[in-house]
Length: 109
Image (cartoon, rainbow, N blue to C red; front, side, top):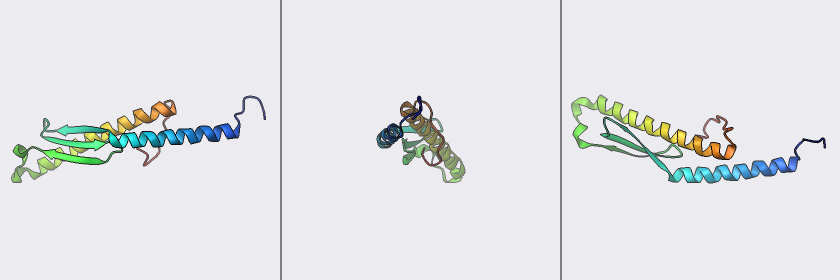
């Protein structure tokens, strides 16, 4: 084997370790939560690190049957903010184990 060329067995072991570490981080991310809010905190969306919406809280004061579109917009804004925070958190955690060489893999985060 030429000098400077990594051993295939070592590469496979390294890839396996990284896969195990990524799986561990994904499990941890499922336990972490972030909140997004809109309307000055009148709508709050809670999302976990796997970008799953866990809850949406709406203050009664903003529930007006004549303003449903505004409420819908606030819910969407709060959820989108929470999802963006969760995505950033996941990328930060994964970059720790990939040495900052995080690839954009659709569906991963």
